[in-house]
Image (cartoon, rainbow, N blue to C red; front, side):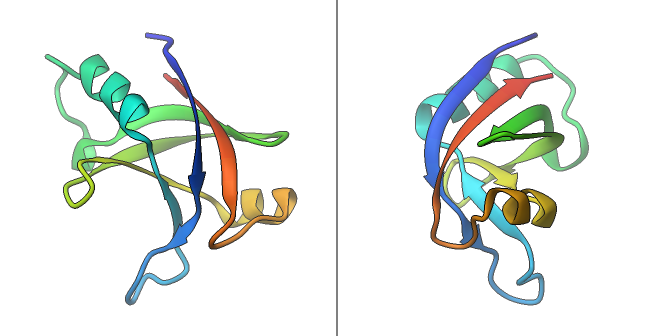
Length: 100
């Protein structure tokens, strides 16, 4: 399946012991596309879904993870991506996600 989602979201820092992890929470339309794509699929580790992500001129392959608190999915933003794009906690970024 090759579905693409485009949205803008703020980068936030995971609280607690894993405070070096940065994420964005997918918007509701993007989360709905991902949920629909997973209907009838066998759940992978933690319910993760493989995606290709792009912020600015930087693209990478990763997974999004379901988040019970928000009812959406979380996209981890690697340190290398944040550094290259000069973004961090609190920055609003335009994201393109393609389901793999």
